[in-house]
Amino acid sequence: MTNERLYKMSFATVYPLLVKKAERKGRSQAEVDQVICWLTGYDPVRLLQQLDKGVNYETFFSEAPQLNPNVSRITGSVCGIKVQDIPDPLLQKIRWLDKLVDELAKGRPLEKILRS
Image (cartoon, rainbow, N blue to C red; front, side, top):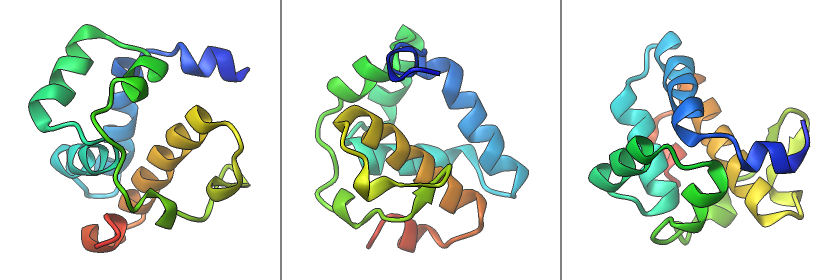
C-alpha cells in the first residue's frame, strides 16, 4: 500500500480495528480513546465528531488540536520500522498511534503508554 492510499483511508474504518485489537487482549475502548486523545489533543467529544464525519487519516491528524509534547518519547518498532526514524511526518503520526495501541494490547500499563 502506498503512503497516499494510507493517508486517504477513513479513520472511522480503522478505529474499530484498533479497538478490536485492544479488546482481544482485555483492554477497553475507553483506554484506546484515552491513548488517541493523549496523542492528538482531541477530547472525547471531538474524537467522536471526527469519527462521525468519516475523516481520513490525513484530515484526522491535520485537524488534531495539538500533538502531545511527549511524542518524541514514543520509540520502538512497528512492522519492523523504528517509529522514531520515520522521515514522513504524517506516516510517523500514524505509526505512533499504531505503536501506542500495540503497547496497550500487549498489556503495558496506561501510565507508561502515556509517558507519564
